[in-house]
Amino acid sequence: MKSLTPARMVELLPHMTPLPSGKYLHWDELRRRPAPEGLSHAEWWAAVALSRKPLVQPLPLLDKQGQPFVFATPSPVTIDLHHIDRDAAGQIRSAGTALQSDSHRFLISSLIEEAITSSQLEGAATTRNVAAAMLRSGRKPRDHSERMIFNNYRAMEHLRSLRNEKLTPEHVLALHRMLSEDTLDNPQDVGCYRRSDDVHVVDVRDNTALHVPPTNTELPERMQRLCDFANADETAQPFIHPVVRAILLHFMIGYDHPFADGNGRTARALFYWSMARSGYWLMEYTSISHILRMAPVKYMRAYLHTETDKNDTTYFLLHQLQTIRRAIAALHEYVDRKVREQRETQNLLATSMALRGRFNHRQLALLDHALRNAGEAYRVDAHQRSHAVVYQTARSDLLALAEWGLLEKTKQGNAYVFYAPADLRDRLSNLTGT
Image: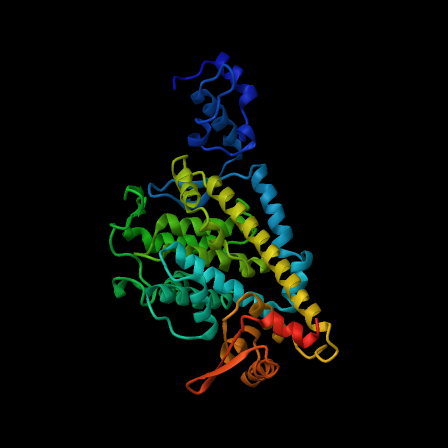
């Protein structure tokens, strides 16, 4: 575009907004929309770019050329942050009460969901039901996909113990080792920075290179810089909201691509560490990977928009903030549904004087699940882990349900296995006389 004359600049003033059409649009999006009357798309973009300059702040994070990444906090960012502050760090609706009353079971379910979907984003092919049964039963992984999921679950549990510690490059390498053990083509790549520069992010549709990461010789220095950024507090300048910091930690692992494989899993795991460290307790119960898996192209586009507009990470921030809010909303829906279903089961059981008060909350949770999963297998050790009770308590729970005819009991080796009968609701109705 030719340089603008002062007179033309005056004509652009009414269109100088960082949010054309109310959104933080990238050039690739803006050029597809009708330009304001009398303006070319290039002039419209110039007006938008000029209006954003006062909002943009540099970050202590650098691109491959040593130029800083930047970020802005236009109103869509601050609105999203407000909702996340309210919904993920404070006391919230019915979900807060339900999570507090049965937190261990919900935490196990969320860890399983994130482990599965984060691994599926990077190629794991195991179905959710099979993977969830593996994690709940404690059996060993049988193939590459199950190993990815098992590793991710173990790493997410491990990160919970690091929430009060400062992040170091050694922590990140140990996390990668935990995530990638027995899953990489070259075992020497496990827990180590990549040793070559032939690792590119490509478009799976045509193998076109979308992103070329920094050279491998820079990785130790870049990782130390990233850890320093992750550990900074609110006194650092510029002030960076804790949620923004967690998202940028996620972004930079993807940008630097420090490992031969497993970068996405590492990035998302470190996001959870950063959120937990800043007190966003509800995020432990959500799965951002579940949301990202629904639209992986938008995830990649958020990276590309940053890299193709002067290192402006606002595009990635907006994408991830919306992802977090959707994950929180999905958690609310999940908890509300679980509470409603458990109440329905309780109401069904409560109609019988003989059974009223017979079942504890663990048995009710299992019956609730069994009513919707005919043929599901239940093992004592899995029930024990799900509810954090001793083995004998878990065994008594299941045996009692079998004695009432609500589970089918068989033996595999030396252990009992209990199955949900297809006619469980009818059996409950017969017992309760309804």
